[in-house]
Length: 262
Image (cartoon, rainbow, N blue to C red; front, side, top):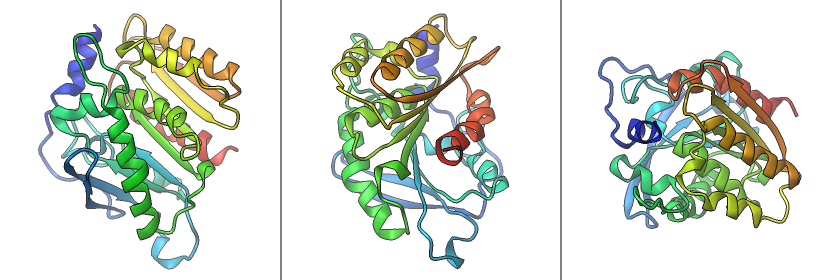
């Protein structure tokens, strides 16, 4: 079953048809010396961005192809733009396109004995050292840790969780959807080595039909971060499966908990 979940995102097959991304979504390309590629970055801005002078919190998200546009998605989009526009949200979303066949390498902090990977440090260095400074330069952002969040699903959930621990002065909160903690037990060891997570916020989500150990793995990690002082919410969706439907239907609630209901 876990191999099936892994293959689900190892070989993205993009849908065809009309674009569904809203007019508030634009794309730019940012060179990544850390990864040796140029990354396509998707930006969602609030409707009043050009008419205001205020600064906005920033949410960094992985797998940008799946966030805004059914045309580029693997198996349906998250409807991030529609959800935020319905709420008239005051936030900037930065979606980072996954690296196709390099996705597993980029989003895994530690290698798997069989599937390898384990190059997330380079990917996160790109976000922290190259992408975030560029976003902060181009847009009116709130740069501080409490206004900078990261979110993803599956391997993206794993690397989002790791990002808060690895860069506690950069990321203050994370949306951790269907996290692939199974990929390497070293993520638990790494968490054990963190002295404190006081002031950090994690929104954990999974479905009880994703995998036979998904719920247990997630709750094991929840207990660890709570012991270290983090604030958490965890939601287990009855009948929830490992797919965009689960993440799309729970994005709004996670966003509101992370940014609105303080």
